[in-house]
Image (tube, rainbow, N blue to C red):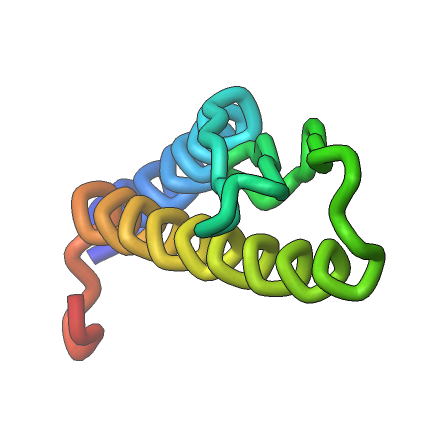
Length: 103
């Protein structure tokens, strides 16, 4: 029994390392979100860190603000979904077999 417990503890420590690596991977992987009009372009890490925002010139402030909010929300939703999927995959692939746990 204690052998299994020690093995589970080692696997849990390995999982911590995997999640640390996943965070680093997501923070170094970027994508670009653009507004439908093309007036707003946001470069974002897949760990939800904004790296750059480009705004078109000559666009009214109110329109630009609206497009910025919509584009940021769309980008953050994409980041959240992708990060959750990768975290779920990392957890299921690396969790020890603990009786009674649902994974």
